[in-house]
Length: 362
Image 1 (cartoon, rainbow, N blue to C red):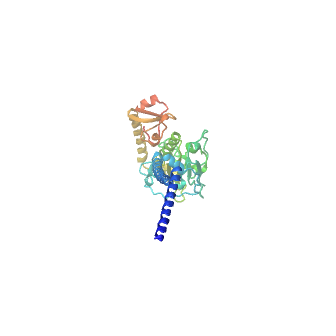
Image 2 (image 1 turned 90 degrees about the vertical axis):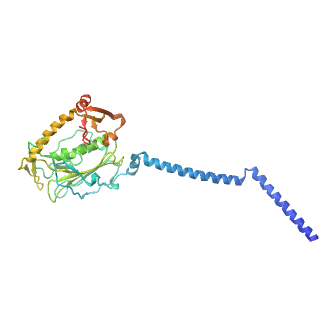
């Protein structure tokens, strides 16, 4: 019995001490705000913050992707590049059939990602063993455009056998064609940038794309990757044609994207591409075709003058574009003039207005 009472007394004392300890802990827990509740709150807060962060990050990524191609391109292509010393694209085109140029590779240029940049540069490939120009490559921007008047040309490229013909515009068969136009880089009497080309190729095949790039750069301030490569057969001194590639960087090709081959031919003229020698074609069909084409062009021009058109005129230079033209879409709002009327009315209101070579609205 005494042992039982002793055990009972011991248990009573232990229980009493435990209750006191629990009360003691509760007291301090209440005094300092409660440890368990704080931990739960912190866990909840951390979980909420993580979810919010994930949601915010996802939203930001989506916004960055859809806001503007310009931002993405600028971040991706803002490093200087070193152009390859040589460039020999594999080009297969049909024989000339009346069109000054044809699209190559679905009109998509061959630029690699590592060849794209917003850092302006110019590269003119060295002449080959036959003294022929090879290729030119540039990132064209407003900073590369000429600021002085154009000088004279004296260099005679390979195949330069000049003759005059009545069926050729301006009579001279050949032009010293700048691979990269003077209006884009200000490079003039550079033998590595000059090619013997027919008047037809220069005016009908090359200038439209040069004007397109120049207009776009002036109107947007963006940059364009631009590469021109003459295509020779064997050891011929005169090129069969030129490959012209263009791609606008900041908008990922939305404004400028082309890959064309311009034929180095002249309707009505027979040309020996080995030497550059030339003569009037033995048949008059080509020559008369060229004449009738000019005649038709004149009558078309007259009818166009009375035709009603809708165009966008750029206040800076008064180049006129179709509303669907990439240059018109990228034109600064402050420079846009919307016009609907005849060509005669357009020129009466804006005497300096000219048709942009990229879209030829009239």
